[in-house]
Length: 426
Image 1 (cartoon, rainbow, N blue to C red):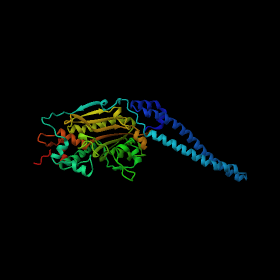
Image 2: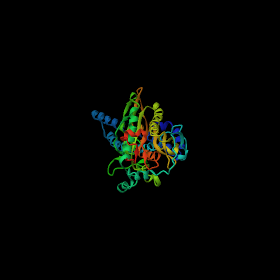
Image 3: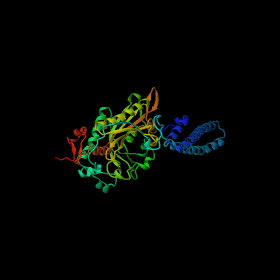
């Protein structure tokens, strides 16, 4: 989140940014927040003065006792003070709660390069990579390929778990784990530290990393427990260093994690309702970096390049898109998507999301670094390395053969015990 100090000193910057996001309701919040902040500081000072006065009266009563003087008036004053302190404390806490509520919901300040937009059509394509194949036969849907080759089962998954779940079988299940290991190997060689994360987080930890609306729209809660299933390992990695003070020499710290992810979201029709693209549970390899402020934009570009390297080696055509204000969310200052070409629909689909959250998450989580005897909030950057289910769909379409089989990308063959073709058991 933004610090109250930043908003207090830069209200015009915050308002201008909210207008750029077309979030006019929150523009009004800024004035109310500053009003509450002013009241809070005045009442807090008054509360502290009353507490000091209470201690002072206590000392005066002791002195009067020693001198054998009348203490009735002072005792009366002392008895009145606790109620006055209690009333002030309640008002202070109420104002503090209102301030925090605003701070948790006012979005991050966007990077100057982020374009204003009304919808995804206003996103900017930065670059394209790879050759789009021309097929001389009608492509099957990835679901039909899976079922015709007995590589998975959607019907059984729907029966036991509902829509948005799937079974993978045989070589396709092997490919799913091969993609994870392939991505992990690339990133570990680049100095990323592998981490296995808890798959559930408490609400307090989760409030440090995401838009609070996600609790209702995206996340699964465990009944009667203060626990939420993680939507991405990014959240667990960020929370891992809550209240941490790094020395600047320790930064940047780069993590990579392969984990299941759980989300309520699911497509409402067509290929997004049945299949592998938009599902409730999937596996993802995630990059995450804690760094100094002056390093974050360079590392932001590095993380998207790492994801590009993976998809180049898989020989899947893709493009990198810079997201406009309508498509960027609350937490990020800037966001890229990597979209892979899906030949059956002749469309690019998002498979990677890369965000620089600057100090927004670390302010909530109190993650700092020491530099020249001063403490600064760390910057956090996250990027998908590979989301396996969406990548499987891209492979099943882009590598589909006329006989109904699917070639295995060359880089994955060593990870698949030499299997070169899905569906070929000869």
